[in-house]
Length: 117
Image (tube, rainbow, N blue to C red):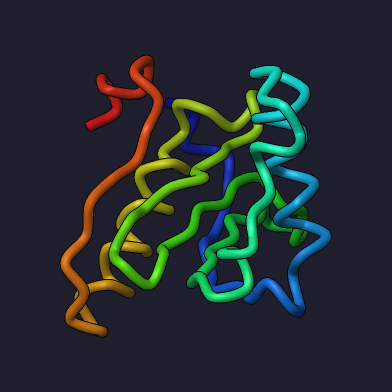
């Protein structure tokens, strides 16, 4: 892990941060992983708790969401930022959000991400 890379994770909203959230998820899921566009977007986004990881210049580099039912999903990190602790920081932030709201959580992930846990 390169500890010289600086980033932070913050709360985001679909209303205010939609462009950044969509750009990240589109790049990772639609372009890189070839998820059909119509499967990536749903009406639930407007009701989710979103987080955004940004570099030290404020550029988006990762995201994730917590659904009202406690499902954590749509975690995406740009390729050049993977294995730098970004995904773990996003997950911790989402878990903290759920804990503060007393929401039991479960993770929705692709099978290749099993090793992340």
